[in-house]
Length: 274
Image (cartoon, rainbow, N blue to C red):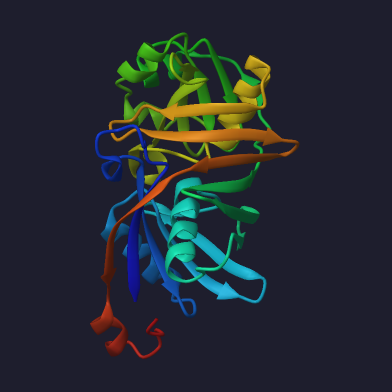
């Protein structure tokens, strides 16, 4: 089975962009393998996401596995998967459609960037409490909740300097837990943590920008945003809210190509070798 690793939402202004962004493993299959095998591959990779995709009549079906299990939506691994498909399988295509647990998604190639079409997360404001202060080490100004929880802080420096308590973060509602603030050189900055998925800090998180984008679009009064995720690796996302959809664009870089598990599939005849 061929596996690619691509870095998504890379920071093209960095000295060496290939070592920025969020690495995702991408497995392009002829047909599906067992769920448990996909889970074990994700654990073995120990990246925040391993994507598996199979071509079907209406496009591709896409699934995402973290070391903690399967999730319903992932932005950076979708971008990484599209980057691999465009460059190694669908050379003449400008758009790829995915069917997923997160709904129908698409990615459009625009020269050296790739634009995701994702759903907007509806959110509600929730009361800031002491548990949140214990988790972040500082009390947020505001907290909103959808699939993920997003804590809003006063300054970019506060977000950059956060040293969260991951045990306490895992007790908060939301699948992922984000921290955001207005940016100096960007419209907004963020960091995202996912201890429930056995990922302490996710380097660049496309799906959480389905929540970050509508929040900052409303607060700043603008539909187009340039967002920066201030992890150690860092990444840049170009976001636009269009009705109940969000466009999230970014760059990607190939890191490696490998073949995994050939002996495993040969010994397990019930597993298709892809």
